[in-house]
Image (cartoon, rainbow, N blue to C red; front, side):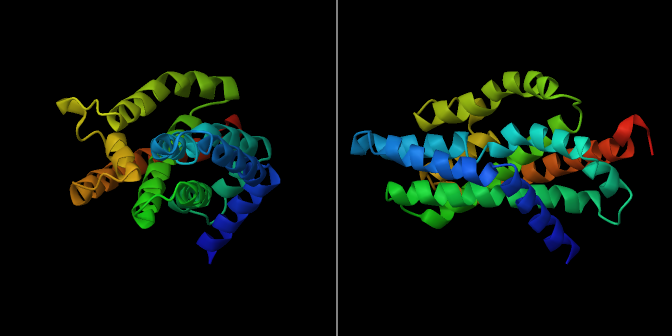
Length: 227
């Protein structure tokens, strides 16, 4: 029940601060843009849109979410509550992943993409990776400028290889890069589904452990004082 309440609370927080409104508008704009492309381009364009925005939204928004929670003393309350760090992380992953999966589903349907369930699963896994990366970065920052400085340079590492991979550039040393595998599944390339899922879940497990340590440290020092 506590886990459900946390997820519902995060969804309400996201609605209050316009996440759902923004993505409703963006989804409509994306669909319009997709249908300005020639039919042969639409699927690739949809894949790039899904990967670079709804799937990656956790990376973009986590800094703002954490800063808002700090300013509103939400983290102070959570740090002395029965809520566990693992529950906090899972709530963030699930609530942001919900938006990602819904938007990805709408975009996929708009271009009549096949194997929708695989696309949604891949989007959920990609969203989880980016949300955990955003949480790791966000737990260490005190301002939005710091978050941007920390994440913008890394975005080239996160986004460039998968997009190049989508268009056929795949050097051997990046063949099993987790985000390339995510892009591959979203794009509908299912030759190595099982090994891709295993690698992606292993990556999520490692990132979860790092996010746990970073979040625990953040909780212990909220308000500028170590608890």
